Image (cartoon, rainbow, N blue to C red; front, side, top):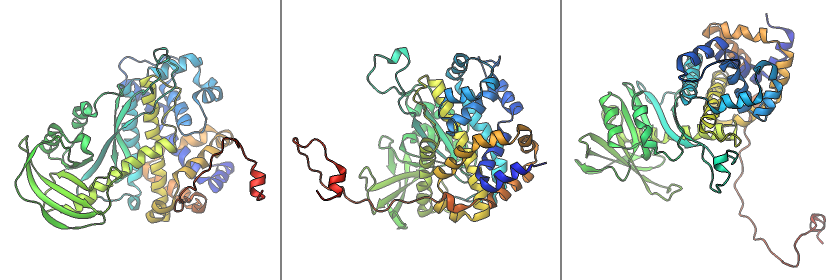
Length: 448
């Protein structure tokens, strides 16, 4: 039974109800404890349950509580351990557990997201598309003893994320505690996950002979930007294939020094990139008879979606907590932010199906959606008992998706429309006067 108070929250802040219901579903204690049991190598559960830790950190990452300390003060009885013990657990969180948490969230939410057929875009029919890219976590405060004498920025870690752009879910992550490690040293781990008929899209840092060869051996495909250090010889000359929004597209066949024969696509840009590059070179092993050079070059441009994901978890969620200097802790928070992104993606998917994908893509502001949740979540937790939420954890996927659709219909989109900034005007030239170190704004407005 759903209470009248619950219904009032649905009417007034349906977005918050959607987020809370999804959290109830994927943060079910029995599921998280099983995940921890299967993944943990050296860590163990004593007084502090892994499910309680995940629940607490989700509130911090989503900005519902401003800090770990504030969240701990609010849920001290539930956590059941000292603050020192809590931080010790966070600082020692194994990277395999953080990785497993992202994988688990995508698996759990994939079934729900699949129910919103209108929201799932098809990038290339017959292929499972994966976009891969790396990100360095921003420098932290110098609280650790080893950092106190350092003036340089303290980078805690890095991670390579894998995005399913067709369903807008982060499906995998490869955490690396050493922020100075080469991204390419992580490629063997990524290759272990590559499956047949997948299409992998990546920038030039992932363009190595071994990576391309192994993808091809697995009967999978790639569209990867060419790295200058990768050698090849020309088999056919460049031929113009047409023009798209970016510029003129040309194609040729080449043989890499490893022996692999691929298509080399060149896009001569109408507008140079931000790095003043006038051409983009791409390697692909997609069959020419199925995927033209024009289509392949347009698909490569979808790579911006993973950069947008990184921007969302940085600007909208709290994926980088400057107080957490330990690499394992920083990676745990970063992975929790990607789980939060997946939850937001399901909310957006339900809204796309109800209101139309075009409206949501063009105008919905992630910032305003998350701000709505931040404003109402804590009050909702007080007003609605935990027992009422348990219903949604046990519910069948089809029924749960129908609830999300019904709640999405209650959302007033006008409240969450983005406010695009107008054309930036050039800044006026400023005047300096050593004899006039400050001015009175009142007098300037008054024309004095």
